[in-house]
Image (cartoon, rainbow, N blue to C red; front, top):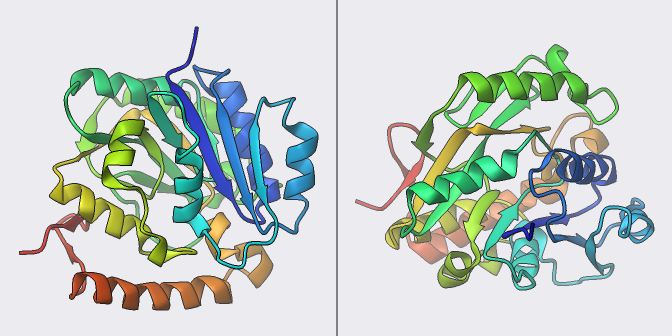
Length: 281
């Protein structure tokens, strides 16, 4: 069966988590043989070598950019991957995800309910409590003792069992978007123009993209039938390298891109009562 979906990951020095993500996509997806594009930018941790050695094993289309001076970052990496997609749908995921059974099919099923809508469909996330935060509508925060919090203590079999039970007991959808991941039609991604490169390498690109989509009447849907584990900002904040704190690149990018947001939109973002971005009053 030909897959209508292409999986896409853009990664930066996140090898230990990338291995888990790729493994999980090939093991637990319904469309196990989907095209799978991996973009690696400025990696120095062995990512490039691992991708070259394993691209045939996991059937990966690998694009390595080892020395970018103009950094694409998260948003630019997504754009890079999307330009190369030839299927009807793009499934974006982060390199610190671990996906559960049929996560892709459950997202695809939602599109049958809204055949004529411009839409982005997201999986329910489960995430370890490493930031001392509370659960959000699309992210369930759980104790680190449940499944571990790092690549080397993650209990993937236990998580899969829990995810199967969770999706079996929860069958609901709600309007929300959680980070720049999830399933979208290629034509709808192209129509909106993808991420704005002014927000590279990281931070604020998702709010900007969601706001532009709101003005174009896109729907954002989360389905609890699709479940992914999110290790929690391991691809951007570099927690293991910095004693659990965000690194200098992340902090500087957040400050720079807030200024870029103000310059672009002329005012700070506005949020609804749930904390999701909304159109300006």
